[in-house]
Length: 103
Image 1 (cartoon, rainbow, N blue to C red):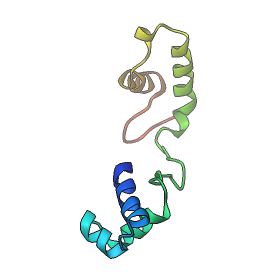
Image 2 (cartoon, rainbow, N blue to C red; image 1 turned 180 degrees about the horizontal axis):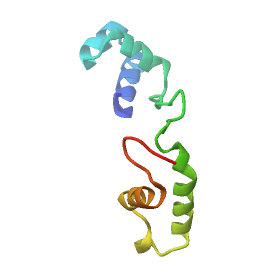
Image 3 (cartoon, one colour; image 1 turned 180 degrees about the vertical axis):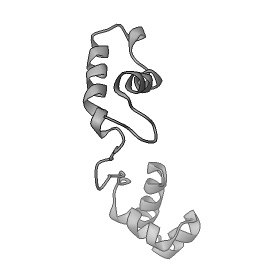
Image 4 (cartoon, rainbow, N blue to C red; image 1 turned 120 degrees about the horizontal axis):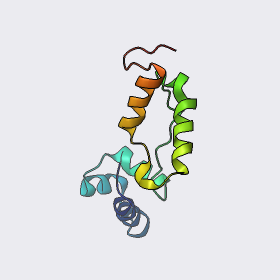
């Protein structure tokens, strides 16, 4: 992904200074198709996931994790659970195993 500064420099060179796409590609060291894409977007488009992330091993434990995190909001910051401690609690109290899990 190219920086906003790179977008501005390429867009200025082509739109204001009248530089051709081929010349801009050569000067800035990018492909012509990249220059065309940069000219079609005023700012770099952000990455967007097409589908939400899936966590098949944790699916049955989401409620437990949410309850632990909700309880942490009521406690002082120093007493909040770390990810490691949540994993230990899932393993010890709920039978979570990394490779396989049993409910």
